[in-house]
Image 1 (cartoon, rainbow, N blue to C red):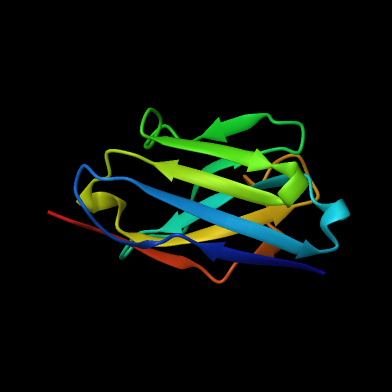
Image 2 (image 1 turned 45 degrees about the horizontal axis):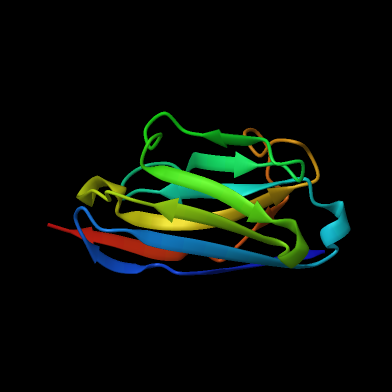
Length: 120
């Protein structure tokens, strides 16, 4: 099994920045894609972005230009750098991982989620 532990969430004012981290442990050799989903209040969980173990990234159009995803394979950690945050970014952010090259349609491993709250 794979365990994912997120950190870095919190409260920030609109226009501010946060950096989320997600460290993987366990059967990490089985992981290819890692990334982030989020669940905004009243909405379904949605993909924010992903990165393969080869470094190929994908970011949702809704956050493109503001959010950056990156990965440190040596530390088995994926990051989500969030800039110019807006109140509508408020929600729970989940780390996700898969043996596949994408987490767009199936996720085998989930983190516990971290709350991001953006105030006016």
